[in-house]
Amino acid sequence: MEKTYFSRTNISEEVLSLMAKTSLLTKQLNNLTLAELRQKQVIIKELFGSVGTNPFIGDNFHCDFGKNIHVGNNFHADYNCTMLDLAEIRIGDNCLIGPDVGIYTAGHRIQPEGRIADVYAQPVTIGNDVWIGGHSTILPGVTIGDGAVVAAGSVVTKDVPPRSLVAGNPAVFKKSIE
Image (cartoon, rainbow, N blue to C red; front, side, top):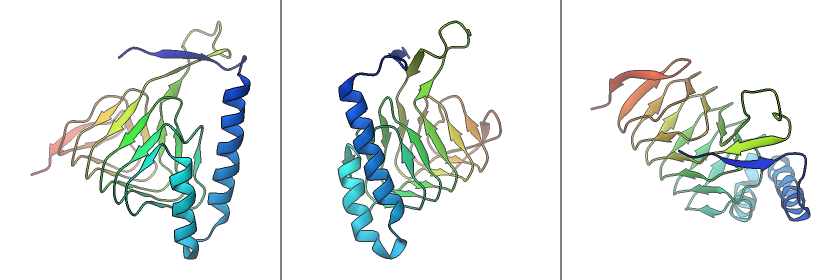
């Protein structure tokens, strides 16, 4: 998958304006209590690019732009979820994301020359009925298939087949889910 590069040192006024709007919306979202679920859902629908029915996001959510995040029906992200959405993040229906999960579309070059200036982005796709365990990290360019489970604390660096369990750092296939 090809990487798209962006400049971190030459941010346009348009991008800065979008980031400011996103910052305001995430602060509003994070200041609401769980008792204010309906108001949280209104903000989620304004923040994200597209949202299915019945979205839930726990306290302390963070993202870059929001507009590049697309979630299906019954989306559930627990506390302390971070989504770096420089590229698209697409999440299917009935997905559960545990606490302290990071979904990252952004990364930096390995070579130190120019690392601070450039950032690359690759989309992340998560299928339907996926469960991502707490403290897991999903890296740029990964696709997680329908019905898969990512065990708690895993670092997903490669695609995950449908109906499979992966675990570890880096996450490796453990078994099929019948």
